[in-house]
Image (tube, rainbow over all chains, first blue to last red; front, top):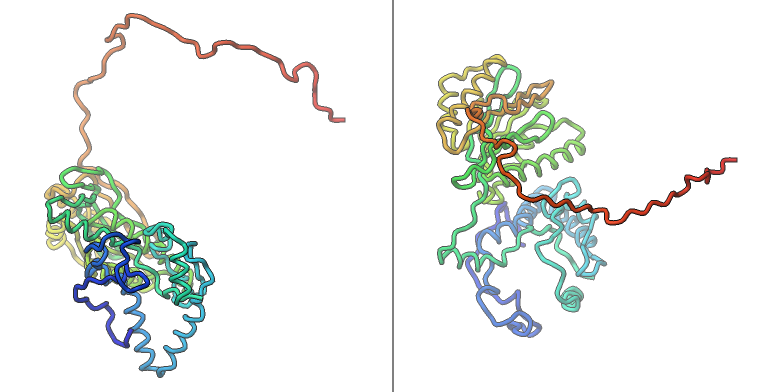
Amino acid sequence: MEPSYRIVPPSQIKTASISDTAGSLGLHDTLHYGIRSLATEMRGGQFENRIAKWEETQDNARLHMLANLYGPSAPMRLLMERQIVSASPHMPGMPQSNIHLDILMGRDETLDPTDFFLGLESGPPLSIHNEMEKKLRL
Amino acid sequence: MSQQSAFSSSGFDFSNSVRNNFLQEKGMPLPKATSTGTTIVGCLFKDGIILGADTRATEGEIIADKNCEKIHYITESIRCCGAGTAADTEFTTASISSNMELHALSTGRKPRVVTVMTMLKQYLFQYQGHVGAALVLGGVDSTGPHLFTIHPHGSTDKLPYVTMGSGSLAAMAVFESSWKPNMERNEALALVSAAVSAGIFNDLGSGSNVDACIITATQTEMLRNFVKPNERVEKERHYTFRRGTTAWKSENIRDLIVNEDITLVGATGDAMDTS
């Protein structure tokens, strides 16, 4: 994200995109996700964007202020530490847990609903091959 | 190896939102959540804070709970009354209570009311009012007694006496006419009861009993069902049937034990060898 002092995620222009359902050719993957429809292309709206981007926006503002105080190397170091620690050896289907990252992000001393609801909003992946493909391509 | 996002997910799945919008447009109503209707009050007195609440929970026009508890525990000397959607107030206060316990362990100090207030307001602001929790937060910490009110969109006020909920106007009328600074405990408790009773008798969304909670620097006293102005009267007649009202015509007793065969085990001198 580009440096900014925003603490609230900006409201997005309403768009429809096929990024969620795109296959390897960049087009809507009918074999996988069915006929192309608005339901798969629409994002959830302003509210979804707000809560999905909340932590990132606040973090970005904090890092920007850190850069103003201590110079550009300060946020760079923090981001480097995070990146090193995010290299996860876990398989994408299994429950993910990264305590080092939690400590760096300050989550080790708070309890979030996502911590005890165990990410049940999405079930086990339909195909581990796809998940691994996405993971290793990055 | 791959990168996972450093940020935790929002925890919500929006994949049904297009379908839900469509259904709503076609006229299908959203399910109604249990709301607390409510009169909740808080008042500052000489030694600390007194919080008061009624005990009715409504679900549309029906009373879902005649004696629910609206004064939630945050920490030992901080309590929070909740109005609005019952699930939201209970879950939010429980979540903040857990986080405050962790925070107190981490800092090693007694928790402060402003910390709870800040956590609550930041959480409610993030959800833009969708979390329907209107709260009255009060407590005594190392800096003294504090009383706050927090609205569902995240705004807060710091005041010596506050009321929230559908019965807040009735209760506020009582406070405005009788509150004075540095009241004694009994006076303040009577005032809080009067304010909540005003809400109970003049607002349809509030009813049943009065709960009160007195928080001072040394102790917290929870007075559950402090006043019960709506007790059901005992019926004047008895409607039970006397024994023998219904005559029975035939009787058939079936023994569950069909066949019983007793074999003694170990009773004939097979005592334990303790030599």
